[in-house]
Image (cartoon, rainbow, N blue to C red; front, side, top):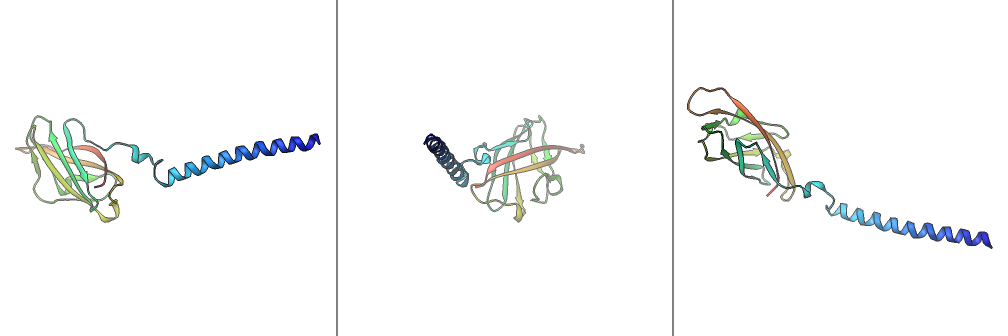
Length: 156
């Protein structure tokens, strides 16, 4: 009889903690399924190209359009070279070909690009695009410089 009581106590102990662990696993699974445990949803939107080429406003749309509004804090006007002057670290991007985007010192200028179709995300998802932008000083034949940065934002 003593042996029977020990077995019953062990069984009750294991079944009680087993149900508690099963409940915890179901709760964690439900949180993961509905996206509450996705760390990218918790990260803030950001656009970082340093302080000299300040990213004032930024947006990525579900059709792949990227709009970046920069403020030129270099102290001199710059020309951002378009089509061949924008290299992408992660995805393929098509920049508007044509004349450079000129941004006078202290002024703002908008740069637009389009992501290739396989790299587009749905609205509400987070997306990161790394860019290297080539530029020169305005008003002469100056050497080309580059600045790299990242855009991490919720797709509109």
